[in-house]
Length: 286
Image 1 (tube, rainbow, N blue to C red):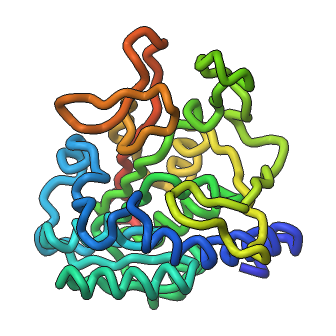
Image 2 (cartoon, one colour):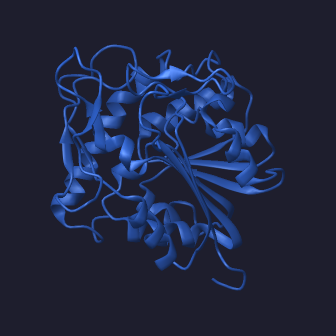
Image 3 (cartoon, rainbow, N blue to C red):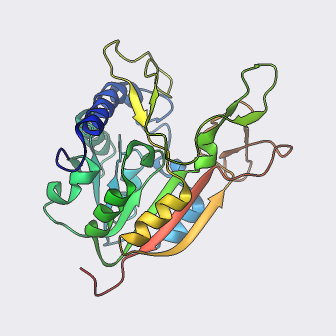
């Protein structure tokens, strides 16, 4: 990693690693993740994800930036030979304990995404899964996409399910008496990383330790993600957008009776909050 990025970016990435090490024990004990089984692993997936992924039995799958592995264990339950990778040592330790608690066989590896090829010994996979809330911690999507392509076996599938950048651009009006959402954050990259207060994490539970570093995020538009994967030699085969999330990002969100997921009220504009992108590595490529 040090040779790929300037010293300032490396330090920001290390700050994020320290921050996620501090968050992890809080997340592992939180009701939000329900790692004890109170929240089923399949809850975090939209139904269309299984349609896009297809049968998983006897396929090699890696989940990049897997955090606690609360989603990762579902891949193993569906028959995949599953690997989870995360840069947080604390997350990997908790993920191993969670998988053991549920009696699920998952191989967890501690590594920064950019160093995944080396950390995995050059292993190739039928599926590379990139889950919700991960791309914002990556400063360079071209390098990320190159890693994804290297991890894929010929004919393999890369699947990105991510919060839509329109969602992350919006926030409630400062006036608490008016609940409308407005554009408050960048949709596109261009002004560098944004530093966020890390006093509290997004789950229930106590504040982070006082010495926890700030956390830094990079904005990535959908076009940037698509172009990075194309430039890495992958073929985009599908792009979905949905108005639903597995948790209520904003207080005004309501629960869908069919899916159990959350969306903005019907009186609000109908906008995408999550997107899913499918890309394949052509057969005959290295």
